[in-house]
Image (cartoon, rainbow over all chains, first blue to last red; front, side, top):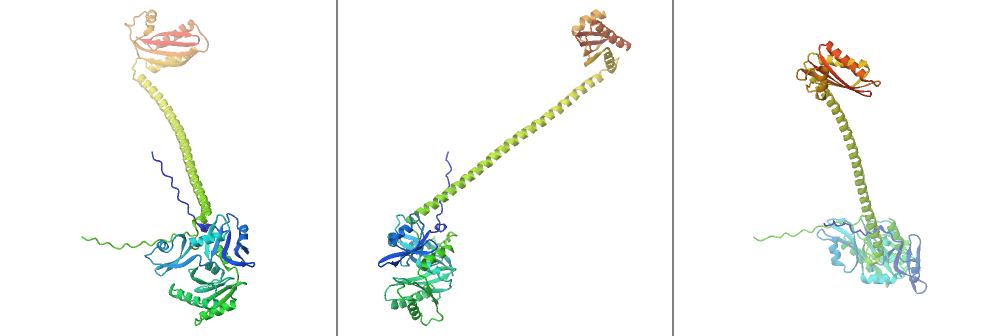
Length: 269
Length: 220
């Protein structure tokens, strides 16, 4: 006599049901004279600790949410035609690594997705930065997404200029069906004046031509005390880059930890 | 004939994202291993507990239905037995009535010189001598059995030369013990009463303490 098979469905692992205990921004801050440190928060106050001291704050088994610089996490907005399948697109574009897609909306006959991916090389760097024997990561967000959540709610295409101690990050973002989408991102470390101008022009061009979005009409300058370029200088470069555009609004937000705070705002949303 | 192969239209994949999903979250398997294990254990435990509770509930339902069915069966059996007992009692009563009716019918069919009810009246009248009748029966048989000899001796007639009309057999008891004189007196009284009706009779009475057993033979 054959016994009937036991039918246990494979349990669904949905990481969104688990909230991180702590969010860490893996972009370094200066600490002391030569040391580097990271900003992290358990949901309240934001703290800055060097890597060595981070291990005492982040214990074994703590569920981590990490914010990665946009050159370490590949975050791309995809328009997928009716004939295509997002899984095939992922298969063709990404090799070994962690990949995830998020459906945004139907745009015309296409479907819009955000695909985020972290490659193996970045993985090794991340693992060396966090002093934990066994990582327990439940959330990985690009810095552009986290920072955009800290900004006041806006619509259309906007530019975020995040001024940090070592570099200036540029994010061209749009709000599609209520979701913040990063259209393109870049970073400037040297020759800020010239590089910034060129990159902003190219990002605006990319947003309009590649993604069929509106041109940039709103600029947010997020800056802290140790920024490499003061906010006034940034505003001047931005105005120069977007010269000729009508009614460009600019806003300066003085917040050195916009990414960590934005990540928690997104989490509590 | 050449087959024409139509291009297969690709099925548009459904967006099977979980309703709780809030954004693209690329996490390496070894990073989420401990959390995934925790979720898997929780999900599996709740699944197993759910299945166990379901099995237990089913078992309880089965057990309850078994107990209820058993109780209903016993109750039904008891009710059926009660109905059958009642039916049997009624049937017995009706059987008795039918038997009595058959006796009365048989008695009614007997055409006799002295009607049977008068004969019965004679038997009943003898109770004035202090005897209570327990049973009275009448048979229209000619065979006298063990009484044949005493009949011949006492009546001086051969059984072949007389016609036996019938036999009354009575049983009863007396209020106090009596002797043979009482039996003779009983015999004379019964025979005297039958002779008044123009019928001859022979009475045989036997006393055992207060119990009386008598046979009255009518002949001509």
